[in-house]
Length: 220
Image (cartoon, rainbow, N blue to C red; front, side, top):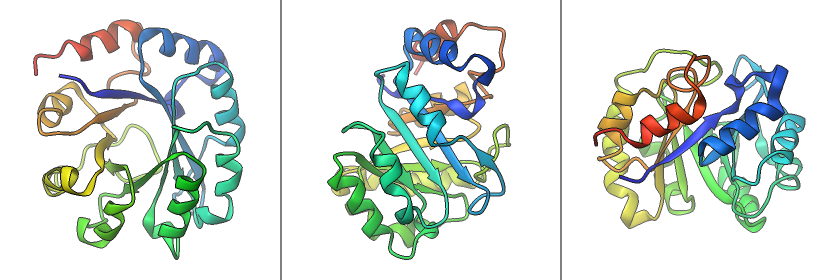
């Protein structure tokens, strides 16, 4: 079964960032997930425009930029100017007065538009936006920090979204506490891709290439 794997770069070793990027690229990661946090929308600062530029310098793989910032419409141009057509940009609908305006800027720049939905965000409140985005990133943990526990009730959100994919033209992605068991359960249900962080990929003794190969070979 084919599914995408994205490396959560906020979990990488920043003492050797260039090496981390090259090693993940060679190991077969599909894209690089960049969490931008402003300390306001979420209670943490993580990654920056310069981090994103640095990662882009060492890979031609797609970028998967997750903006956890207040009013992304005010700064979206800074990110779009440093991305390539075909890269993905996610915003949180709650962070913007008129999220469809920001999404249209992403579309106009040739990027893939996405929304990220928090555990406490209901599918019903983002229903209309499902028609204008290509990707929906479902947070299975509260946003802002790595290493959190999976919130069981989020599983019901996937069950609501997945049947809508074909009709409304979007794909569903997983972000947070992603284990092999979660991939084995949700990939067959239709989840298109998984963000890999400290649960499976980073901070382990196993080389990235071996971990990614083992995930690809899961009995699904």
